[in-house]
Amino acid sequence: MEEPNQLKRAMIDSSAGAISGGISRIVTSPLDVIKIRFQVQLEPTSSWALLRKDLVVAAPSKYTGMLQASKDILREEGIQGFWRGNVPALLMVMPYTAIQFTVLHKFKTLATGSSKTENHINLSPYLSYVSGALAGCAATVGSYPFDLVRTILASQGEPKVYPNMRSAFIDIVQTRGFRGLYAGLSPTLIEIIPYAGLQFGTYDTFKRWAMAWNHRIYSNTTAEDSLSSFQLFLCGLAAGTCAKLVCHPLDVVKKRFQIEGLQRHPRYGARVEPRAYRNMSDAMQRIIRFEGWAGLYKGIIPSTVKAAPAGAVTFVAYELTSDWLESFLT
Image (spheres, rainbow, N blue to C red):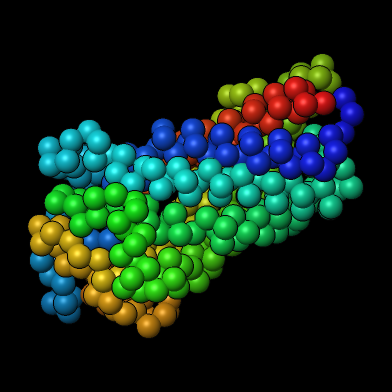
């Protein structure tokens, strides 16, 4: 099969990225909503933390466990509560993954001198990590306002402060200015560099390991050079899990910056006051001081449970869609 030209290659990567991101977002939205609810509540979520005398926010938290949070959201907000903020999430994740995979493929093409995906597997692990990190940065800047609105809508609960995405956008611009749409961008970029680097770097590493395993098991060269959908799923699963476990504290800090000043119903606990944190370092110190070290890992269980299938679905959907589009367009 001949290599597609640059325009066709960009169309393939952006389309496959947008489709895979949209599918992954719809499937994992309930876990994402639960994760955000944990991340934005200031009260300690563990019983031992409440015993500490030096914690300023010592009231019990609304959400204490993944199952309890699921039951509360279902009872108070209905099944639609698990897809709160899904429209801006889709508007965020589809251009995000489109930009991410397009930039990623471009970097790998420059590094290997070939636009064929099968030739990229031989890229050094170092370049895989760097390519993933740069692609993640480009995608973050291009889609960040939708990520901000998604977080605000997913965290507000009932009664709603913002009935829809439009009202949230207008209020943010009026109260914070245009820069308000990029609140928390700095910690997000600091988070996305190791996260995207780990996700794509480890995904390529796991793919190489899977191919090596196929080589030992199969004598057929065709079988050893191609991976099954299940193997791709496992590689994506492992890559998403590794990246999330390492970078979760940075995600918590990002969410706090995103919801600064957001009015919430008192039953959801204390709110993050405007300009509560001077910078990222100050935010981490305050979270540790007021909520304990566990504060940096709020929502880690639903986050990890979500990251694994999200990564797996995204990578499998991208690989399959990209192969189909490539064969169709070339």
